[in-house]
Amino acid sequence: MAAISTPICLSSLVIPCKTWKTNSSHLFLGKFAEPHANSFRNKPCSLLSAFSATRIQPHFTVKASSSSSVGSAEYTEEPATKVKFQKSLSLPGYSSPLSLLGTGYREKVFAIIGVKVYAAGLYINQSILSKLNAWKGKGAANIQEDSSLFDTIYQAPSEKSLKIVLVRDVDGKTFWDALDDAIFPRIRIPTPVDELALSTFRSIFQGRNLMKGTFIFLTWLDPSKMLVSISVDGLPSGVDATIESENVTFVLYDVFFGGAPVSPSLKASVATGLATILK
Image (cartoon, rainbow, N blue to C red; front, top):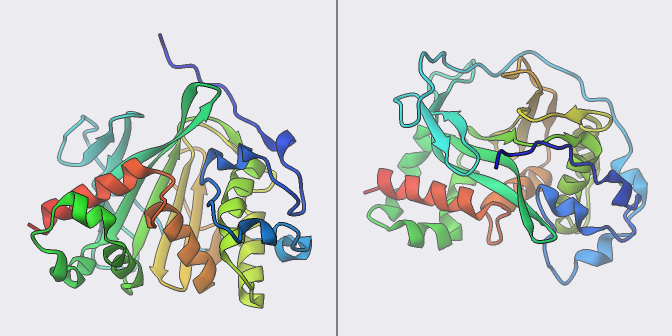
């Protein structure tokens, strides 16, 4: 049976202003089952008051490719979604391209039907590999369970980029609610810097329709600075927002590569890629 692309819009199920939230927000990132999580639900809405995100000069370009075949020298196909990822991404201003470590997908179960929502791939500056010598010869299973390795990747003052490719339509509010549901309970006492970062992040998704094929890039330049770039019609031509908060940027990384990743297939694939490189 052919795949059916139908819009997913669960915003009508979301209760605003940090009162109890429906599980619909698990669609993208999921809610962490932590004992302290619900104690943050009644935080005043001023935390996420709207700020306009300023579009700045372009940062993203992708090397041109003449081939998109599976297993080609320039592309890797994520098998569950058939989304193709370039094996190399270049960021203007940096001499070295970012290399693809692994790919995976996010699936949400509705009733008894699993619905794939997006594919994702992690790219890193290869200079980070020099900081991983302690894991040489380790197998993929050991690497996947070792939080210190993923922390080392994050803390390295070199670029990491997560490329998300939507495989279904969704409205921006639903996407933001999912992000917020993962971020908010994990920031115990938001600082003014955190509040500004969250407000900026929120504003780029509100009122925005994210169609199938949309690219969303989260690029960590260092542990305290992350760029967000979105394109609904191909590769991004610029950066939509700069997030400067160590708390917010770390939580977003931890959602994918911490102890309870929302895409286990992505973390497993990255671990396999690292095990192959670090032999």
